Length: 401
Image 1: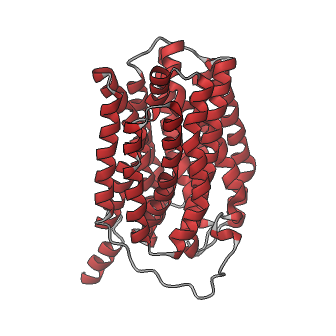
Image 2: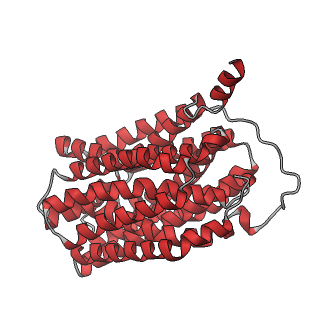
Image 3: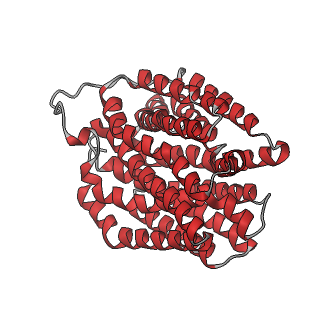
């Protein structure tokens, strides 16, 4: 009996350190995405920026994030992760003070771009820390639930931000709230205890795989398609609802429904992931997302606007953790940081292209064309996964993870 109790404790999914890392991740993304859907409105009202300029300014952080993430994976796999985590989280927190003091469009663009550096690094080290504190027998399932923390934040935070803005009309209040929430995440990061790692004696001193997981190249290409779709949707849904559907207070409900879809899909998908059905879970996710983006693009009505939110949430909630598991399972155990940085690089590359492309198309053709493009990209990504990427993963996966 004592042995069974010891094993149950050892294999416990919701252990103390895992919960701490989940809270850190939630606060990190909540602070960042509290502002995300409102920044286009802020730039429009405060600086009278057109959609092209808004797209350029908002894509700056993605460029910075992309530049730092390959090095983040190397640093996370090389140095003490607890030290790296606290330093990166502190830098992420302090950058919010820049939004409060930015008085020109150029200054705001610089602050937003610079913020991408600690954001990119912190997301890599925090997700790698989550893998470290998970028991190996629960890793597939644990990775899926870990993603729920940032997906929930990315869905709930915009709703909260939009509600606060409509209630107060005060952007400065939102900047201060993000600063305080980020500080809470930093404090939490200082309390995380990570297991000691064994040094890998035969690891090459310098190689491309320290910066990007080349074995997962097709997975990276595939998820970039889905990141593009998310980038357009998350950044322009507020303006779309206001201009096309005359919905001013409904954007908060859109993200609330999106979050409900994400939560429900995590619990459904966790069973498949625990059973090792990773590609099946991903296939379900990409098809549900395709239905959501397709409905959003083809039917311009309030009911389709909100129904699409649920479908996109249900889809992304199964797709992303499945892809993260696939990246981890194509990497060696000493490449977890690189695997995490690689999926995030690919996702952010897609998001950055989506923000830029969405702004240009919306300005020159209209939001209808922008979201038709999104539906086409989701279809292309879905076909790529079903026809090629799922088989690619089965060939490239390693048994050690």
